[in-house]
Image 1 (cartoon, rainbow, N blue to C red):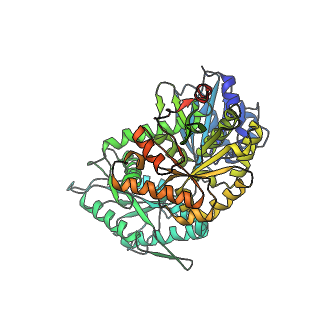
Image 2 (image 1 turned 180 degrees about the vertical axis):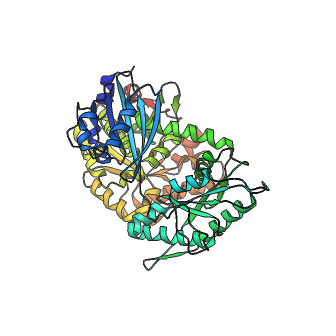
Image 3 (image 1 turned 90 degrees about the vertical axis):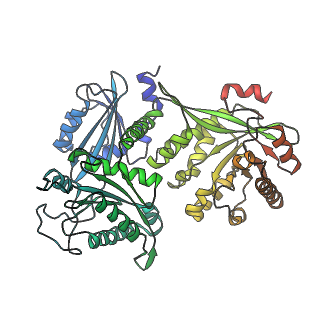
Length: 541
């Protein structure tokens, strides 16, 4: 059972560099530990340990003090959520009861709008001359809506999210990103009717409220028009920019029974469109509510999984073909949540990347794998997967150095596995960081080769130690095309002096074919399933 002491020692909050504010608080309201983002969000002084919110009132907005006192007062169940606006910042806090004595608070801030907010009772407008309102004012419009006498029209909400907007900020800079948002707003304002209302929520998200039109025809027609309009190129600071937009629809009394749910349901439909119909639109349906609730619960649980020590590592052996000797292990993360069993990495790793929790999780994986591998024979390597998101902070070299230093593992025994997706996003930056890591003696393997945009340019630009043939090719080895591709990758690796390892090998027939064609290493169920660390000595012997 996880104790209060376990939670205190599971992670050092002041060391967590995140935009999400984190605070561990006792039942009396005293702060046990906080991270820098929490101090910044509430304008707190650096020294807050063992002080209550009331004692810090002089350094804080009184509204914030009341908000925080409410958050720790009373019974909330397992998780509660509070929202407040402080100094024009919208803060959302999740309060998690860890035990009777402690609560974990996680606070996030929504960025302010780039656009002016006109009075809510604006006069009639003509397309192209209107300005945007904010989320609060949009909510007032919805709350004030009254059905007409005929009862044939009903409000519809279109929630619009720009796809790949983050990449624009990363490649062209935030000034260009802001300019793109303004150009997007201008296009939206040009296509609406005079009684439509356009709002900018935050970041790359906009909304259109259709008031007096027949639905669902008007909403779906507008969604199709906007999707097509935003695919047209933009000229931003002299450079052509191509984006797309995903759109969620919700229609009152058809999809949504209450005006208070109209925005929420449109956002759920947008989320579904982002994941399943990018560049198009989706209409809200009840199943999305259940899916969103499950996703939200998973996100909250993911944020505290490290604190509760729910992650563990399993290891799958990698075997040399010619003598069937184990030469290394790949570290594979597992999440065993109390009451929910094992949660697949295919489900939580993409979420961790979206929420940027992958930085903390990835660091834990690297530290744990190196520490456990240091107890193995010196001729056994450890391979650790690195997410493309982990390269964003530009400190991966320092993280690797710290893991090696803390464990005492020789750098030559560590191999980082990256996917082609990393190189596609920002090849120059990725290769610069990888070359720094290479100088330490750590090797780098190209994982899942052949499943993305495989490029010879990658192999010529960086001295990879290994190419890993994706298991999908091995599983389809009965087809001529897959066998031809496998032979080609092995031949390419041999010509470039790069080892080839085939993943997902399950049968002797697959092993024999790979051996005949010169593949040097394999891993898969034919050798062993992934096992916990305590079973490794038996496998090695």
